[in-house]
Length: 370
Image 1 (spheres, helix red, strand yellow):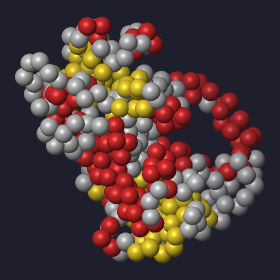
Image 2: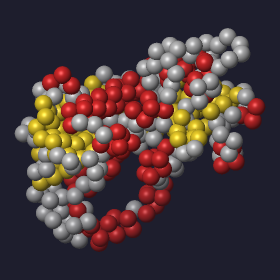
Image 3: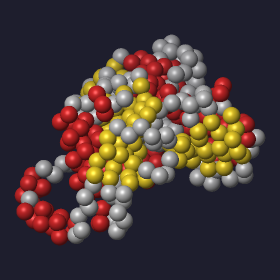
Image 4: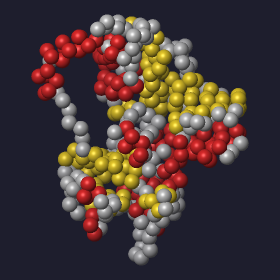
């Protein structure tokens, strides 16, 4: 697995930080079971192991280290059933199917999103990293993030409110009211056990530490990287769609002969009013780092800067249409494909006028997090 292959200093830093946060549990409750917020665990993991933090993005991994994708979870050690995916946009579709069809659709969607994550970030293996909480201690466990073996599915129980099923490796359940898929984790193989000493009065402790180190805290405060969200879809009569002859389907436009990978990311008219200095001026080239680590050259094009293209133009389409979305040449990108993968927009980060990075998100979901 992952943690067993990391150097001892990184592991010590990770466990020390976990215990430090756990020591502050009385800020939140009076339980003997230490408290951990899942976002804190994700950040500590990425800091200690120098991993890429993917938790803000709509994918199946919370972190990436080398070619390993890691789903990070923290929960009470006694609660084995944990949420692993949501399919809110498919709630109505699922309700109209028979239980056997529901299980197949849920499994296919789950597998598609794991496959998307691996393609998008250049990942070859996916695992879960678990930090479970027990009386005055934390445990660390790891297990494979398996796709669901559709050929081996067996229904355990079906009701109007939920499904329970398994394949040849794992047991799952699905809650219809929350459109949420759960996995039953095996917690027998603990890799690390660490005692946690909870501070009786964390308020006085924090006041003392912060007052004594106020200048250091001021000097180390990080500035958030500027970013914008650009939808990959349009809306007509309340319905989302991808235009058939422009944008990500520009290769299908009429007129001159076009490369089969010719695409652009459309920029709406109000973008520059809201973000006047975010992008360089028209035809000024800049570098964009892709989620898999590769870099392509891009520029703003067309009248009023309404498109974002790569140079050469086919580079963007080869990455986005072929490598990530897995569309065949000549196959139109439709909104249903974005919906299936749980994305519908890109997020663009700006480091300076010549260096940017890009990733996929679901527009509404990211705005909720912010």
